[in-house]
Image 1 (cartoon, one colour):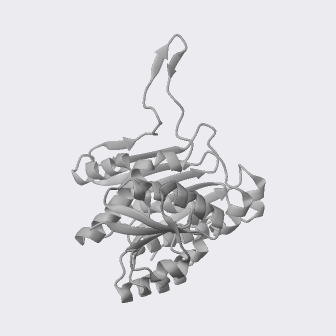
Image 2 (tube, one colour):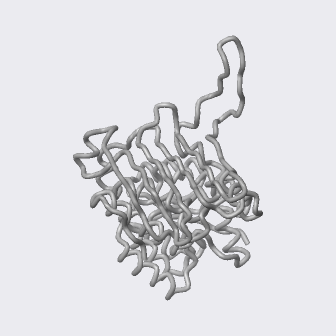
Image 3 (cartoon, one colour):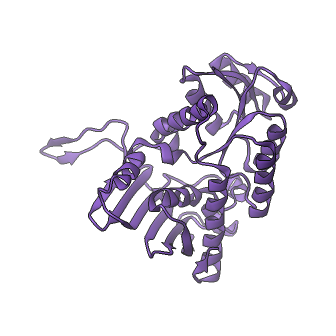
Length: 330
């Protein structure tokens, strides 16, 4: 079975997914749709597929699944629309910025029996998966502390910030999912602080550009997340897991993993410049996992429920940072 895809959204993340879909021998990219005609035409020309309207994709019998890469405020409506059309759905995070709206959307998914995968690509990064494997094999014993560092090379434009839902729902949400993935149990309390240290305009828009979050589970296991919208040295992505028997860590990745030593000291190439290059393997692996679930009936992960739980943690972090207190998570 060759899975036939339509791509909804031809922007930055849409291009990443187009590359992942067309790089898999078990798939074909049939059509692309974007509100900006030129963007759709350019991507269609690059990958030799058709440009179709949303209505045409919904009614098409030569499309099995859609990948939703449109703006966040369209995700839930599109999920419901294509759930009713009988197509499988891969949706970039988040499903919506409202927990209540996500609940309603997932009810439609459940009622229609739709296969839905939410795009938390970092679960599929080879290094981070190797950490999870080490935990599963008992290499570090019982997990006690997780440290996640995630810093962007620079802040996004103000227009993006104003629609993003804020740093916790837009940026940290990936780290909340990774925390759940590595802790292996649900978070029961969130303590967060946020500052504006990078761009004053971000603060004027009601958001933070620098944040630290402490998560705790019922057993007492902890996860510390540090975020910044500015890392002058590149895209900073590191994880460390400490347990009763030891520690496992994933260091930053570089386009070329070499080290030069000479009379000037030790030198290594710069880090990846952003997620489009840092997580190429992860994006390909998550699409492969989605395809396997469709072809072989395997369980889909991450699910809509995973997306909901990460959003709940994001809301709790925002509440904690703005109210200056620890927030319990039900």
